[in-house]
Image 1: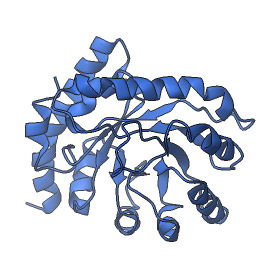
Image 2 (image 1 turned 90 degrees about the horizontal axis):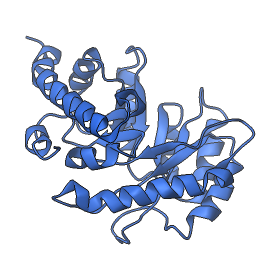
Image 3 (image 1 turned 180 degrees about the vertical axis):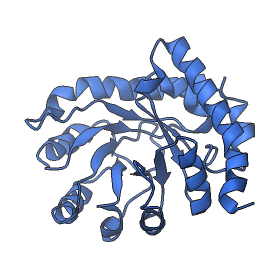
Length: 248
C-alpha cells in the first residue's frame, strides 16, 4: 500500500465526519453549505496526505510557513484546482515565497506587508486575495490590528491593485464554542460596517470572513464564509477525532 493510499484510509472517515457536522451546523444556521469554504490546514504534513485529501474532494489547503508552502506548491503543482491559503504570520522577506503560489493571504495586518505584496505581485503569474487580520480579544501574543486601526489599513488596502476581500480573526481559546461567538459576531459586524470603505471600482467583493478552528467550527460557520479547520482537519490526522467530538 502506498503512502497516499494509507492517508486515504485515515482521512476519508474523518472528512465524512467533518462534512456531516458542517452540513448540520449550516442547516441549523439556515445557510447553504456551499456558502462556506472549508480550508484544511496541511502544515507539517506530507504531500501524500494532501494528495489523498485532494482525491477526496478537498481543494483548499492552509499553510503557516512560507518555505513549506513554496515546496508543497511546487511538488503538488500537477493537482488540478488546488488552492493554497497562507494563514500564518508573513514576514516581508518571505513574501517572495508565497506570492504567485497562494491564492489567499489571511494575515495582512500592516501597510508595509501590503506594499511588499504589491511589489512582488507585479511580476507574479497571479495576485493573491488579501484578508485583513483583526485582533479582537486584546491578546498580545497574537498578530492583528485593533478595531481602531482597521479603517486606516482599509483605506490603504482600497488603493491596492490586490483584491482585499474581507477580514480574519483568531478568537481566544475556549472549551465552549459559544464562548467565542461574540468575537465572530463582532467581526461580522465590522465587515458590514466597513463595506463602503472597502468598495472599489474593480468590483472585488468585500464579503469574506475567515474564522473558526477545529472545535470552534459550529459557532463560527453561522457567520463565516471560510471555515479554517486547524491541525484537527481531515488533512492532518492525529488530533482530529477528539476535537470533532466537541463540534456539536
